[in-house]
Image 1: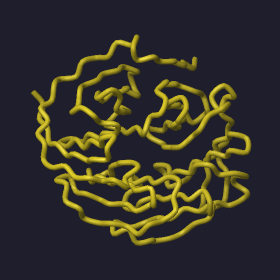
Image 2: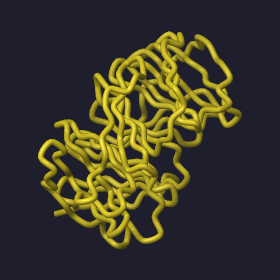
Image 3: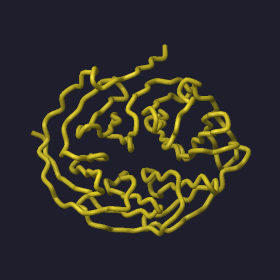
Image 4: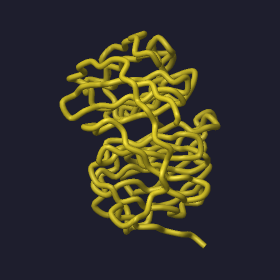
Length: 263
């Protein structure tokens, strides 16, 4: 039976996480940055409004900078390339590690009438959110086949402003700017609905999805549905944690990198 949770964080107990000691390594101004993200190698990427991507290694050294580019969604976990979708042109580019374009592909009109968001899958296919009917479609680009399709529930698509789409652990994640995070399985069933409006982004750490709220990282275990949380340095609107590093991004556009150890 599908289980849907509507979560208000003031009333949900969070499992305590062992305190971490964060040691600041460096900080820098990133005034043009809109979003921070991370690739599978632990490199941090700062994405500017212009579409320029700046990659930093885990020690905060700048190692690559892309050209400006139109974009709707950038997904760096798709190693060894970076996936960049541009809704206006209805096309996606695959960039190599030096941010050179390896290839450009158009979203076939037969796949979706209004491809609002497009993201890669773990098996080299695509998920497409079609705004025309708020359907999600899994596509095999090499054969032009729509191999899976379902519509979002009306209660979650009505008045939604979807800004991000991601697949992880065979689940589909949608970020609604107005409401929060939707988690669906591959049959289109709504598994979780996490209410946290105006969220800037969410990330993954092993079996957990996490995001920053009120200067805490809040983790949701995708296998057990358990919550845990721990505090991070104050004044953070975005934050990413890896095995050894934490990067935060403040409201005044300052990025700060920390190393940490478990007590």
